[in-house]
Image (cartoon, rainbow, N blue to C red):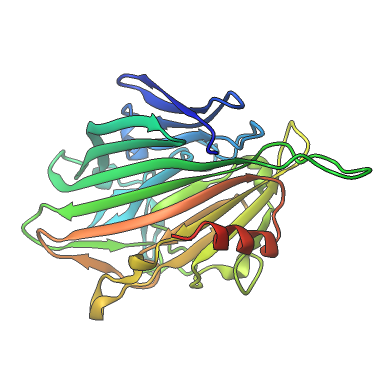
Length: 321
């Protein structure tokens, strides 16, 4: 049986989803506007495991615009909806505040919890720095599959506190300009191994140097590779134990762009900080024609413990798309 979930809405600020069985606030979805230089946009922070350990970071001193889990656009037709300085080939990162745009909250279509599932459905406006409306986004965030670890059995067995739960993030972005929107990344603009854009997770400071796993490989060398999933495990500060996040992109995410496909590539780092993004414009720009919609769906499973590849694959087989 699914664990019951409760929603608390502090209007104009955030929505919090709480697991009523354990009393843990699993996510806070913050939609209040923040500093213009940080490309204001809604984000999820903190995200917690069922064992009540935080697995996101917020405004770290190296990148103030990194905020938990958020949808970003590092290079969008000359604008920066990522935040901070803008990468310019031959000049590195340059302060160009006139290029920093925003994703503005417009309203919610659904905020509800029932039958072990919580839903937040939102309308947003993607905007140029000057406020010009460039795109509409329909966003849907769901919390589901809240599962506690089974009790230990046998002599000397030890319990793994908590368990796992999953978040599904869906975004449908429609171009409202009279010309194409071009999604890119620092890599499409000349910087190697910096293809970040799209959904982006910044891990807590303690997760630096964590373990990166894919279906057929391990380590930060998975940067720029393709695979249906990628996992990141780290050890907590302030509490014993580890946490694991499993990132998945939906199979249909590939069906977009040139020749009908635009496959996702993984952006991943464990030094100098923990970060993962299923980038939709790692090596090549993605062009969205006027009136067309870019639809993407992702899942992030948040688990207590350091899961190995076998356990991850078993979980994914038991929880298919």
